[in-house]
Amino acid sequence: MNRRQYLARTGAASVSTGLFASVAGCLGGLPGSSNDSDVTVSDRTGQRALDRAAGSLNTAAQSLTDLQDLENPEGVDFDPTEPRTHIETARGHLETAAAELGNDRAADLATLRSYADVLEGLVAVTVTVTDDTLADDIDAVNAALVGSGDLEAANEIVDARYEKIAGARDRHAEATATIAAIDGDRLDELAGIDLAALEDGAATLGEVVTALETLAGSYDATLDADDGYGALERGQSHVDSGEYEAAQGEFETAAATFATALDRLESGRTDAPDGLDDYFETASCQNQHLTDAATAFADGAAAAANGDPTARTHQSTGEAELETVQNCPD
Image (cartoon, rainbow, N blue to C red; front, side):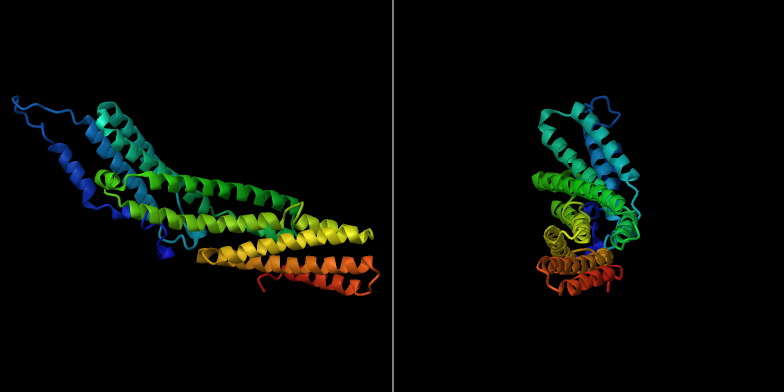
């Protein structure tokens, strides 16, 4: 699927433009609407409410369908107010329908409620992935990595971002599970929605969530106070104190952490949206040089512990690698 049409198949796109008109037209000419007193008038309140619920949900879905460029999620201006309002309206109609219809329509109500749950989840996920403050957070991280920013503050920023994206991932998983449980034929009959299209739309949105989680998770590891950049700083402190064996252990921990983050970035970059590619490239570059720096420092500490004069060379190599981090991507 072309990722430039990320949500073009969330389901609303498959709704015929005549659907709403036909529903509205039928409401005025329903069976039993004649003034003939000999005709028994049936109460259509429940059915009308069910139809209106489907219409409101399809309108909410259209708000997602209109997002055409999640290839660059930061560039998407998404306001969740309108779709959330339509979903809330639909839920109100479903309550009316539930009160008016018999138990034989319970499956129809359950299907539309599930559809509402899916859309509500996808809207919440879209809000997270189109958050335009991502660039500000990454700028804070980059400043900390090159020594011109507050490392502790950057760590807190990344933790908060990672938690938010992980929440979006969980919400997306819930939506996907709900889609899998929906009766596709019934959904099509009630709302004119192709379940396969809904699945595809959710899947492609999931690619964006996965890419952002990879990016945030890698930065979280890189800045980690215990095993990431914190270990690198402790290793340098041990070197200054002449505690070379302790320094070597800290440097090796840092190197392993940076290398793991790098592997994660390189793997996740394959399916990441083009709009996030620069972020992946910079983070990969940084972790590569940090890995090389920590490895060189570990070698230097080991050499110093053994009185090996090559310790100074390893130290210089590590310092040069750290300097290169500020030039990423290079």
